[in-house]
Image (cartoon, rainbow, N blue to C red):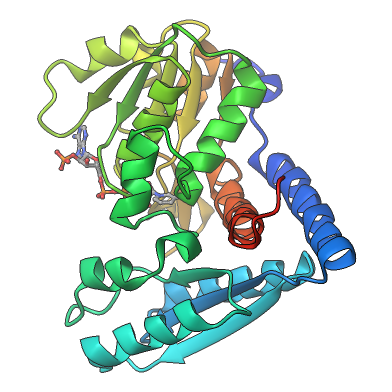
Amino acid sequence: MPTTTADTSDKIIDGKAFAARLRREVLNDVADLKDRHGIVPGLAVVIVGEDPASQVYVRNKVKLTKEVGMNSFHHELPADISQSHLIAKVAELNADPLVNGILVQLPLPMNLDEASVIAAISPEKDVDGLHVINAGLLATGGKAMVPCTPLGCKIMLEETIGDMSGMKAIVVGRSILVGKPIAQLLLNANCTVTMAHSRTKNLADEVRAADIVIAAVGRPEMIKGSWIKKGAVVIDVGINRIDAPERGEGKTRLVGDVEFATAAEQASAITPVPGGVGPMTIACLLQNTVTATYRQQGIDF
Ligand code: NDP
């Protein structure tokens, strides 16, 4: 007997649509800053070396920054740049009044120390939210610049669920970039949060108890549909490229950390990969740049 798969299309959280809406809001804020205050927000992106994936991300960021009416400053630096020269470039951008947000594209080449480069960015211009001051502000409930991917997840969850107070959430993955700030945001939204990682025992049971599942691991389809509680909301941050021989020789495709088809049958809502969290990340970068501009200018928003 052939197996039939239930139609789960109505459960998909459409990250592209969320991102398009957020970019429209940013465009309106940028127009307001121009019209009422004579300010054009500026985002500086620093890329070191020629990593092809990073080049694609940066080109996309530059294009979308211009589309919402902001100034985009693009700095391409050679892979063999010294630590002190890179930090001097960051200091120059910190001092530039036309630059409201600074993003240093990661990963940096091996010879450079990422932590000290991030520490050199002015926390007020740290639109990636990675500076320890911003991590500390997020942890203590202050006015942090929130890392873009976690912020995107939070926005989609709030709009999908509404009040998350008292819900059980599990975040699988504890990176500084994704897992930890997401857990912090969920805690701030009054969820009861479990953080899972590579040493967690009985991960399947931990996931089964959760009303909200965030997967940020980087392992293709590791979280099985049978682990998902009926009605849970699933946010899949993972982006994994796998072989797809069914599409032809040498072809590949992207999958998340969650086994999508089976998880979608259990979940009440789920983000796809691609087209879920990914598009929100850049939209949140633009929103963070506007937020940084308002704060730097002391304008209420
Ligand atoms: P990291 O590699 O920094 O962190 C991975 C985390 O997963 C670690 O905390 C690790 O645990 C945990 N982990 C690894 N194996 C297991 C396992 N078997 N069971 C449970 N936990 C495990 O990755 P990132 O956080 O940077 O990224 C995670 C994923 O999200 C990647 O696929 C990345 O491409 C994607 N991503 C997507 C973005 C987007 O815009 N959509 C943006 C950023 C990332 P431990 O700490 O114990 O090692």
